[in-house]
Image 1 (cartoon, helix red, strand yellow):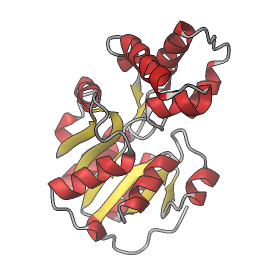
Image 2 (cartoon, rainbow, N blue to C red):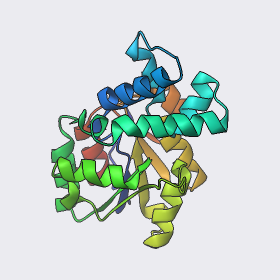
Image 3 (spheres, rainbow, N blue to C red):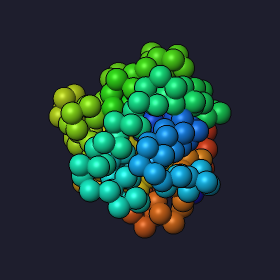
Image 4 (cartoon, rainbow, N blue to C red):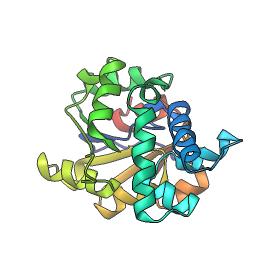
Length: 223
């Protein structure tokens, strides 16, 4: 982890959801397994589904299971069949994250949820865990495919709130968060308690690596 001994300039903090705020793997894995079963693909080892946490859902079906776009769209519909009422709440908030969000909020910083997950799902999850009061805005993809890529979610927030790029920090756990931040020309702080590895995050150009929510809080607030 880099030493954080200089006053940080970040005033607008964009935060990923899956793997950064919540450990959503159980619900995501169950939803993928349900969808794949409908296509005759049985998942005997759910740990292999960890690679599916982070990318857009349709991308995972196409990349990891060789589906064309039409079949992948059908698989996404099956995934949501399970996820909408069950998988969405097979989920838990990482230890230390509520305290991190509270401290950022009390420090006067503006925090925004920036997820590739469909916005209605993200809003339900954040509300379910009582975290909605910490966010200035919740941004995600839409069910019609709008803003399905992370850079599109980030760009939307930067434009909507006229956020100066030099004052914005993206926080996430996978290479997609780093790539999206780089495409939008903002810095990225990556966390190791989620689903990405240190090598993955550094190879994609993360500016900071934080092992815990407390490390992230220190990075941003200098406390």
